Image (cartoon, rainbow, N blue to C red; front, side, top):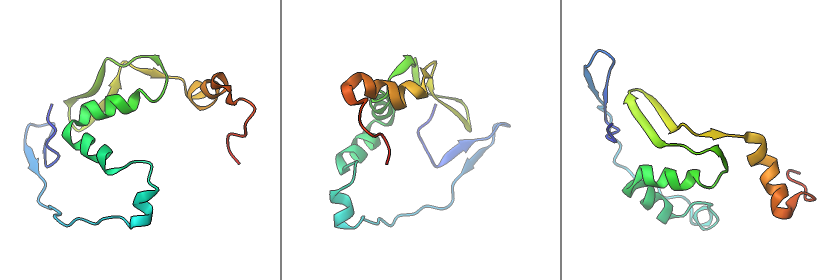
Length: 109
């Protein structure tokens, strides 16, 4: 498994390198950044430990069966995220909110 986003090994074993590198940085407008759901510390955490960050984010939803591995990158370019885990979309979208006492509130208007 590799976290190097600039090198990918093809199925025949050859290595491809990304020749286009963007060095510019574009900050969002200040007002947008102030009201963003994710702040700079989340981006820093994701960059410092990508797998740990996504494991933590995955805990924000309810799993019918927990995942065993955050990422399986054994067969590039085919990534498998949250291996072994199973989600119930209906439970995550509706039922867990009803259980938290929000069943009488409008979900989407």
